[in-house]
Length: 297
Image: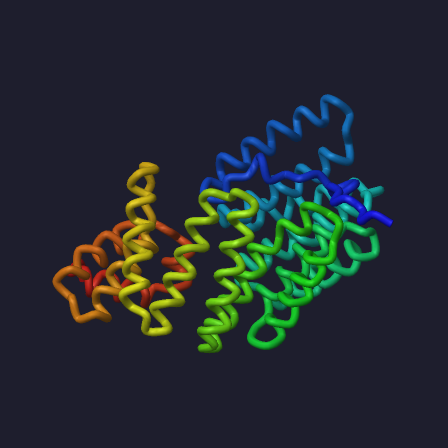
């Protein structure tokens, strides 16, 4: 018997074309416009699902109360399909997690994972499992990431299988946090392979950055520095900038004892990364270090 072909998820829509996670405000407007179109076409189920993505965009803008009110409104309508219920659970959990309330987020992700699995929505089950890992810590986070990866790899759903790159990345960072750098590197390399197969341009750059960052942790400083220089050149060619590349160029040069060369990169990194409200809230000491090493403190 021939192998069954890969298929798209049968019910839940793929909303990725409307997303720009670097600009959640613009994404919010696109989703609101799409909601209006779907309501005008009397596509009630898709309109409800689309509104969950408006809530997600609000959460990414730290407009948490508005996001919860919108999700309440979706739920109050009643008679929701299973995949819309999964979306509501997922997005409410994400809002809680983004507002630093992981203990309230965790049971919602678990409910979403169970309902999506029962409904055959592999892509949403993988999404929920990976969010449980994000809300967790250490070995438990690793277990959920591995469970999500196993689901993605055995699924016939294309959208579920496309999670492989993100999951390898997440597993890599969990291992990195445990100082298991060689194992982390293997997953970062697997993430890059997945991104290349998906022809995911910007995500390929991120995957290469993760490999270079791990090489620095392994003490392979010359290799790490060379990769970061290549990434900087790629961003220049594309007309973009990346504060994390600046930071790593500074860190590699600093570790090599080349402080005079490192300083300007630290200064650029601080100027860029200090504009990120999430980083300013979560890692103020990191930004303070960049300011000091870049001569801005």
